[in-house]
Length: 270
Ligand code: SF4
View: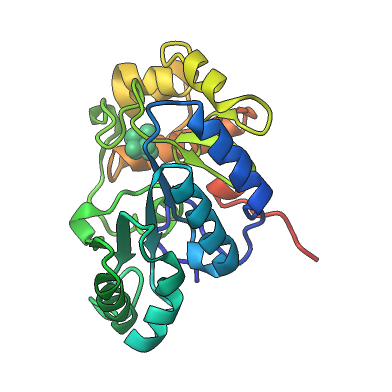
């Protein structure tokens, strides 16, 4: 599947998959950062790698983290089948979030999401439903290319704050299969396969980060001004401007705007 609204350009053409050794390295490093309480497995779609997911959830739980999963529940073809998929995770999940909306399915509430929610509740998992609506869309990643046409656009100068992430003091980070640590999808502060996560966290300084710094000070409009980027006059929302500005900045080869596939550039696989 390639959902139009996906921040991370999730796709069958994506490369890179977590291995159990990579998961163990991440968990070991996460234990060294006392403020990390939760580990979430999200994607793309984490159930595509089911045996690895089960083992990684088990080891995260045993390491003392609270564990969450975000899934589109494609696998929950009936309640009985959903119970089979979820039983090995029972007792280890503190947040089971199911995406269910017209961006993931041709029905507002897919039968699969309902089956998964019923099964998860039976197994005692706290269940949340994530529903993206037109008025809650964020136009970044694939959404910035696929969903902006026909939407109301505004002058770029008005997007002077980041409305969704606290880049000055991030409360969460995302780790991709290559070890890149993202403070917002596509904005990287380091790679935990090259340096220790604790050191990356300790050394992160939003004031000097070439992407986060301008956004913290003046939002995506500040990013445009700081780097003197060639852009259009109008954008749908702050993320649309931010993502588009970053795409323009990547032309200058920014090491902080990776991996390529987070920007819709997939390596050819012959
Ligand atoms: S404005 Fe930029 S940094 Fe803030 S949430 Fe949107 S894409 Fe992320």
